[in-house]
Image 1: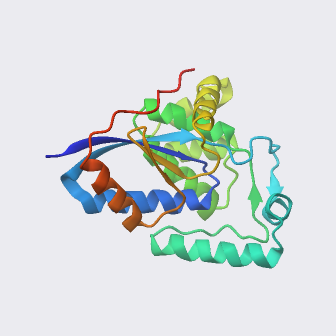
Image 2: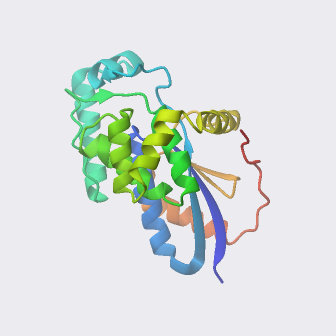
Length: 226
């Protein structure tokens, strides 16, 4: 008997471990097949909510936030790039000349895409725009292009971006997940009760999903409201 489960995937579009986590989760869901019917909802989290529009060099950002040397950053990014490649995703963003940007508008667009039933497609298009094509995920033109690539109406996407719509909805969701103790991403919350943190491999997600499918938990988190 197929069991419905709800999955809230809390993440940022500029988080490489979020790409790895999503790919691992999706592989795990493929493995369990008809055991569950998963409803995945992408929830907003900003790694750099105060980042200015022009962004910051990745090497400077890593040094400032984590105390990383350029060599440490390069080694860490190389490992991440290999993990992503093993999962079929290309990270071309260079640790030397890459930049980190503000992603709030990307989250507004993702909220709209959820209403349109194309949230997962837009999420992947945004990951590809930033990590593979090395584009600015805060630029409205880049975001509109990603929306079109995801099968959404480009003009409607541009209107959402220009109007500032869904800003409060995104802020409310961010506050909600922070109030539940989410301080790092990816954070995968299943049935509003079980938390799986980090870019876990498919095996870890598969084991968790199979165990959760054998239980009938009551939801432990309420839905965020605007």
